[in-house]
Length: 268
Image 1 (tube, one colour):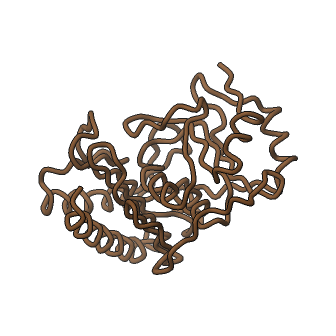
Image 2 (cartoon, rainbow, N blue to C red):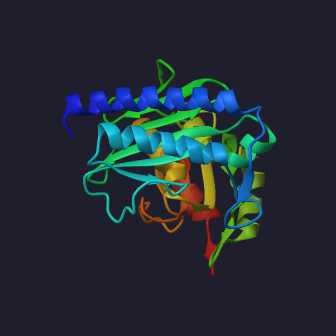
């Protein structure tokens, strides 16, 4: 992608994310309808839907040839990553949004011919914006994030574990995860994959493991983590697939191999 095009795309995306965040904050203490999707804990609200519709309108009016892959179904039927594809989660962490009114994020990843160009994660209630542009590093608000430390050890790491450690025909060996909990310094679960990726990029988490994650959950975080030298793969070591669900092991490179070798064992 041409640098000038990428720069303009980034500026527009950032403005739209801030505007969407403003709209969410205006609505967060109002009464809104909460529905369920795949199960009783898979929540969606009219705020999720209206936020994705906002992005759909902005993208299509400014970039009619771009595709949108969004969680709530207002985008395109994306079958390939040819051209420019926006992968958007309007509210990542809807359960937190509904119950806590905090700890959720807007996540926008922009890919061109399958290459991650721009990643934006906005912690709406904390007003913290994480951004990454290909080849330019990653930022927390206006401060550039350092490359991840090469001194990290598993024993001094904090690992985020998603509650989805079993999914369809994929589940982890529970005993190995219990051992990871013992061997690491601590574990956390924030309820927003986008924020967990951002926290790894920031260096305040060291890894994140889940057996079920949709592309819109990690598309922006994948770009962010790449820009600070982190690594994201599936639990079977295969590259992530941005068009379908994935198992995810995202971490500082220093502990990635140990996580995959010593603690991740998939069971049918």
